[in-house]
Image (cartoon, rainbow, N blue to C red):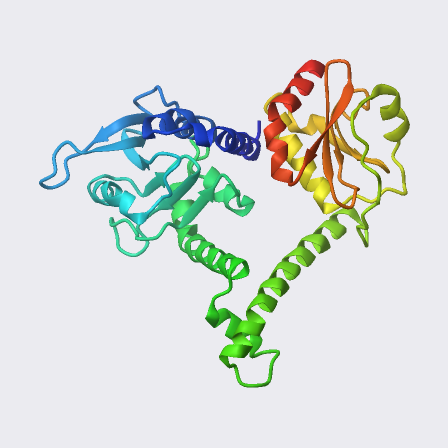
Length: 364
């Protein structure tokens, strides 16, 4: 699997198992050791590469331990401090990292709960860990622009100098993106005033603030949707994405004859953003069993199909998203009989992950 695919597979595991992991030790075993091994490429069972419970005396503090130290050529390169998966990360959790960073040769420190990974270095003062991370990796919402830099910390292509040289830009770009995202989610009074005074010529009174706050929120969401749709239209070479009204039938239907009849590449079909997002979720789940390039999609008039090997006799799932209200996820049993499951949001596809994997296994 490619780097991004391995990361997506781990992210899916975290999503499915996070609530069942209640201790720090379980978090290490379920999430963090796989990250060190499958993502960064280090052998967690080789003490020349990964040292658990790494100890270094720090001033008057003797025998303190850091959860993991990643070694290269006998020198500590990366320190990792872990917290349990159900606990949000706070800067207070990094106290041991601060102390260890100053007494080892490490230039990278990582604070993680298995889902979020905060990467620190020493941009502000030499050999002193910064207060803010230069890179934040969130497995619940992976920012693909960070992957090239993250890959530089892997065993095969370890390039610390390149990471450090890019760290300052990464740090501020990341902080700016998170600040902008926060304003889009819940605009502050300053942001509302900043935007409003560019379209409203009167005095910015409390009444005007109350009037424009929901308008700024609505406009921000519509702007983001427009940007996503524009990019999708460009990628697909289409100028519009109208939804195709269709009645969503219930119950089970036999698939093979219907698949052959309906999965012809019909030029009248229009692919929606929601269908492509659903396809990416199904594909991420299926990738635990087969290579990602084997999972493809075809759009038909009445549904959007996800297939193995581009073969309409190997349906993995169908997305019935053309109805005006209710969405359905179609799944198949061993006899290729489809059963439709009502879903309210795309995230609910993950609750059917095991059934999707079983379909793939049956064909593979």
